[in-house]
Image (cartoon, rainbow, N blue to C red; front, top):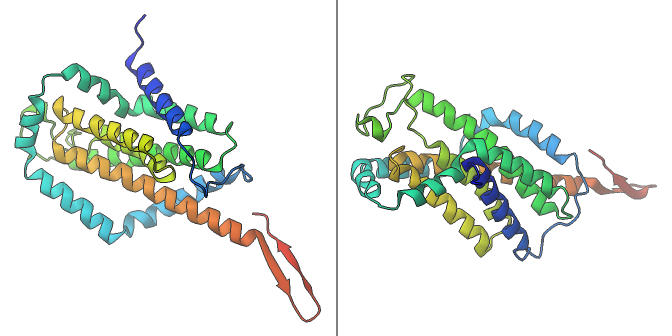
Length: 266
């Protein structure tokens, strides 16, 4: 019996997760999740930090992203025509499903739940960052879709048709956002050829959306940029939080008549 596309996508994600587990772990990997409540704490602090991150983004990163999107947009029509001429459309449809948020989010939940059974701190952190990035990045992308109102290629209105709140949902690509949001934490935590393969799958997923006439090339560049940026931002925050927690957990107490250590539990 043939499986649904959603089930197939979840199997692809789980297979990538298993491959990443098989990859050699970096020497500085932390084993043993000594603070199982860190994920609840991270979610709360990350939510509070979102407004500030949106108001004060990293200027260099934002500039590079905006310049890349603008540069590609100048060739939207020609690149789109070239990609849509590809003959193997069935293969493109297979890769397309990897970026389906309705399948990726449940798969990310399963992967995170499975990571809790692993006695490896970094595996758990990567799985949680991937899941959280999917949620945050998809919300941002959906909001931008409504604000931009860009028409899709199959609507035959051209790449320059933007009408805010008109129902146009081409910019940015949700599939590209999903694919890169899911893969980036694994790429950062486990820089290994297998994670590079996962990144290649994310890139192919993004390209498939143009080949199938659902998005302009600049849409997928924008979506990939959002997915990557949100994931990288979360990983930076979580890594910093762990370092601060480790630094504050045990500290010396030195005084005229006192010598000891202070144990801080947060």
